[in-house]
Length: 149
Image 1 (cartoon, rainbow, N blue to C red):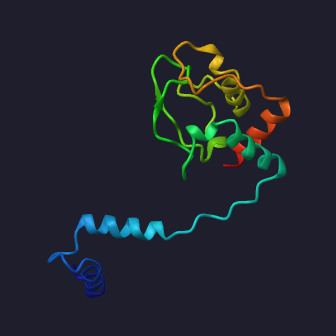
Image 2: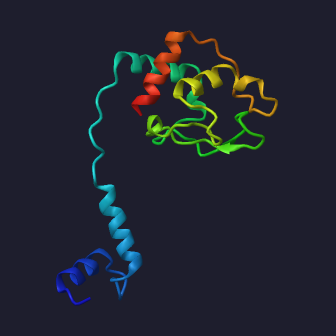
Protein backbone atom coordinates (compact mmCIF):
# COMPACT_ATOMS: atom_id res chain seq x y z
CA UNK A 1 0.00 0.00 0.00
CA UNK A 2 3.00 2.27 0.48
CA UNK A 3 4.10 1.90 -3.15
CA UNK A 4 2.15 4.43 -5.27
CA UNK A 5 3.07 2.71 -8.55
CA UNK A 6 1.75 -0.63 -7.30
CA UNK A 7 -1.39 0.99 -5.88
CA UNK A 8 -2.05 2.71 -9.23
CA UNK A 9 -1.55 -0.56 -11.13
CA UNK A 10 -4.04 -2.37 -8.88
CA UNK A 11 -6.54 0.50 -9.20
CA UNK A 12 -6.25 0.32 -13.01
CA UNK A 13 -6.60 -3.47 -13.05
CA UNK A 14 -9.55 -3.58 -10.64
CA UNK A 15 -11.37 -0.24 -11.14
CA UNK A 16 -14.72 -1.42 -9.73
CA UNK A 17 -13.23 -2.26 -6.34
CA UNK A 18 -12.77 0.60 -3.84
CA UNK A 19 -9.94 -1.35 -2.17
CA UNK A 20 -8.20 -3.13 -5.07
CA UNK A 21 -5.02 -4.11 -3.20
CA UNK A 22 -6.17 -7.46 -1.75
CA UNK A 23 -4.76 -10.98 -1.58
CA UNK A 24 -7.54 -12.16 -3.91
CA UNK A 25 -6.60 -9.57 -6.53
CA UNK A 26 -2.93 -10.44 -6.08
CA UNK A 27 -3.74 -14.09 -6.79
CA UNK A 28 -5.78 -13.11 -9.87
CA UNK A 29 -2.97 -10.87 -11.13
CA UNK A 30 -0.38 -13.58 -10.56
CA UNK A 31 -2.53 -16.18 -12.35
CA UNK A 32 -3.00 -13.80 -15.29
CA UNK A 33 0.74 -13.21 -15.48
CA UNK A 34 1.50 -16.93 -15.36
CA UNK A 35 -0.93 -17.58 -18.22
CA UNK A 36 1.13 -15.25 -20.43
CA UNK A 37 4.28 -17.35 -20.04
CA UNK A 38 4.69 -19.31 -23.26
CA UNK A 39 5.16 -23.05 -23.21
CA UNK A 40 8.75 -24.09 -23.78
CA UNK A 41 9.48 -25.18 -27.32
CA UNK A 42 9.01 -28.88 -27.88
CA UNK A 43 11.10 -30.89 -30.27
CA UNK A 44 9.20 -32.26 -33.25
CA UNK A 45 7.90 -35.80 -32.97
CA UNK A 46 10.13 -38.50 -34.36
CA UNK A 47 8.66 -40.58 -37.20
CA UNK A 48 8.09 -43.43 -34.72
CA UNK A 49 6.29 -41.10 -32.27
CA UNK A 50 4.18 -39.76 -35.16
CA UNK A 51 3.12 -43.33 -35.94
CA UNK A 52 2.27 -43.77 -32.27
CA UNK A 53 0.23 -40.56 -32.26
CA UNK A 54 -1.79 -41.76 -35.23
CA UNK A 55 -2.28 -45.17 -33.63
CA UNK A 56 -3.29 -43.51 -30.32
CA UNK A 57 -6.18 -41.84 -32.17
CA UNK A 58 -7.09 -44.85 -34.32
CA UNK A 59 -7.45 -47.37 -31.49
CA UNK A 60 -9.61 -45.12 -29.33
CA UNK A 61 -7.23 -43.90 -26.63
CA UNK A 62 -8.62 -40.40 -27.14
CA UNK A 63 -11.97 -41.58 -25.81
CA UNK A 64 -10.50 -41.13 -22.32
CA UNK A 65 -7.35 -39.10 -23.04
CA UNK A 66 -8.23 -35.87 -24.85
CA UNK A 67 -8.02 -32.10 -24.52
CA UNK A 68 -5.01 -30.04 -23.54
CA UNK A 69 -4.00 -32.38 -20.71
CA UNK A 70 -4.98 -35.59 -22.49
CA UNK A 71 -7.36 -36.45 -19.65
CA UNK A 72 -11.13 -36.57 -19.52
CA UNK A 73 -10.99 -36.14 -15.72
CA UNK A 74 -13.64 -38.89 -15.60
CA UNK A 75 -13.51 -41.79 -13.19
CA UNK A 76 -13.27 -45.15 -14.95
CA UNK A 77 -12.80 -48.74 -13.91
CA UNK A 78 -9.54 -49.77 -15.56
CA UNK A 79 -9.38 -53.23 -14.11
CA UNK A 80 -6.33 -52.43 -12.00
CA UNK A 81 -8.30 -52.14 -8.78
CA UNK A 82 -11.85 -52.72 -7.65
CA UNK A 83 -12.87 -49.05 -7.80
CA UNK A 84 -12.88 -46.49 -10.61
CA UNK A 85 -9.93 -44.10 -10.76
CA UNK A 86 -9.60 -40.67 -12.36
CA UNK A 87 -8.21 -40.68 -15.89
CA UNK A 88 -4.77 -39.08 -15.44
CA UNK A 89 -3.17 -36.46 -17.62
CA UNK A 90 -0.60 -37.93 -19.97
CA UNK A 91 1.58 -34.81 -19.99
CA UNK A 92 5.01 -35.66 -18.61
CA UNK A 93 4.03 -39.31 -18.42
CA UNK A 94 7.52 -40.64 -19.14
CA UNK A 95 8.80 -39.06 -15.91
CA UNK A 96 6.19 -40.57 -13.57
CA UNK A 97 6.92 -44.32 -13.39
CA UNK A 98 5.79 -46.60 -11.91
CA UNK A 99 2.32 -46.44 -13.41
CA UNK A 100 -1.27 -47.02 -12.32
CA UNK A 101 -2.53 -45.95 -8.93
CA UNK A 102 -0.93 -48.99 -7.34
CA UNK A 103 2.42 -48.79 -9.16
CA UNK A 104 1.89 -52.20 -10.76
CA UNK A 105 3.22 -51.19 -14.20
CA UNK A 106 6.95 -50.52 -14.18
CA UNK A 107 7.19 -49.10 -17.70
CA UNK A 108 5.12 -47.48 -20.43
CA UNK A 109 5.49 -50.71 -22.38
CA UNK A 110 3.77 -52.51 -19.49
CA UNK A 111 0.94 -49.94 -19.57
CA UNK A 112 0.42 -50.26 -23.33
CA UNK A 113 0.43 -54.06 -23.11
CA UNK A 114 -2.05 -53.97 -20.21
CA UNK A 115 -4.54 -51.98 -22.28
CA UNK A 116 -3.82 -53.97 -25.46
CA UNK A 117 -4.69 -57.08 -23.45
CA UNK A 118 -8.05 -55.47 -22.62
CA UNK A 119 -7.19 -54.89 -19.00
CA UNK A 120 -6.28 -58.58 -18.77
CA UNK A 121 -9.94 -59.51 -18.61
CA UNK A 122 -10.66 -57.85 -15.28
CA UNK A 123 -14.38 -58.39 -14.61
CA UNK A 124 -14.98 -54.84 -13.37
CA UNK A 125 -13.16 -52.93 -16.17
CA UNK A 126 -15.12 -50.46 -18.26
CA UNK A 127 -16.38 -51.73 -21.62
CA UNK A 128 -14.15 -49.22 -23.40
CA UNK A 129 -11.13 -51.33 -22.44
CA UNK A 130 -11.18 -54.13 -24.97
CA UNK A 131 -8.35 -56.31 -26.30
CA UNK A 132 -6.52 -54.79 -29.27
CA UNK A 133 -4.13 -56.78 -31.43
CA UNK A 134 -0.92 -54.73 -31.50
CA UNK A 135 2.37 -55.74 -33.06
CA UNK A 136 5.63 -55.19 -31.20
CA UNK A 137 6.32 -52.28 -33.57
CA UNK A 138 2.95 -50.69 -32.73
CA UNK A 139 3.62 -51.04 -29.01
CA UNK A 140 7.00 -49.38 -29.56
CA UNK A 141 5.36 -46.56 -31.56
CA UNK A 142 2.77 -45.92 -28.85
CA UNK A 143 5.49 -45.86 -26.19
CA UNK A 144 7.50 -43.40 -28.32
CA UNK A 145 4.46 -41.11 -28.59
CA UNK A 146 3.61 -41.34 -24.88
CA UNK A 147 7.26 -40.64 -24.03
CA UNK A 148 7.15 -37.47 -26.12
CA UNK A 149 4.35 -35.88 -24.12
